Image (cartoon, rainbow, N blue to C red; front, side, top):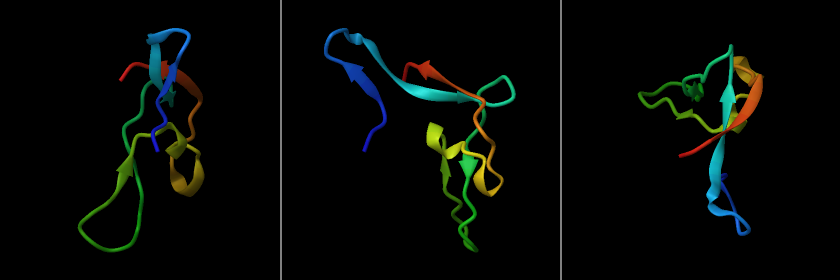
Amino acid sequence: MGWDWWTVEFGDAHAGAAGVLVGGGEPGPVYFDVGSGPDVPSRTHWSAYDGRGGRPRAEALRAVRR
């Protein structure tokens, strides 16, 4: 499922996605500890910045063009 948005009324002029600000800037990816192994999954989706499990908490959401 994508989290990008688009409006019929305004078309591509109002298309984009949500980004987050942490500490006044755009944070790097959030890494998830899933146990041992060489692969450590990461995400940059706005919903990952919720402050749980030691992750940074988003201070604000902003529109970004992707």
